[in-house]
Length: 122
Image 1 (cartoon, one colour):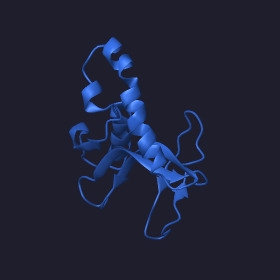
Image 2 (image 1 turned 180 degrees about the vertical axis):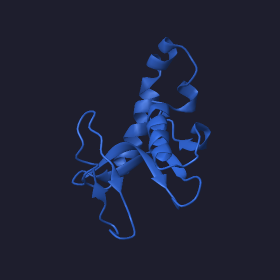
Image 3 (image 1 turned 135 degrees about the horizontal axis):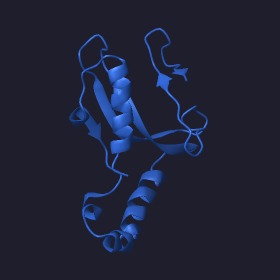
């Protein structure tokens, strides 16, 4: 997954907030290792073990009761013209709203100064 789909959705959210970000402004963590991009399908499939090894190491380094999620994050001072837009892999608690997602479920977690560390979950 190269993250472009998540980046486009994040950009739609940014524009709904009247921000002036463009797709090139989104910092995307591509989940496909660089050495596996741009080759043939056969080459990609024959090197999947390389990718599996990399992600097994990431999973092994997580805290207990955690799960990996690929997220879009919009942050910064929303009174400005642009915000920070990131697409990245994060480790979260399985008990959190984000950690409890299944399949193609989607949620928004909104963190504000008023709510502190407890997000508004939509």
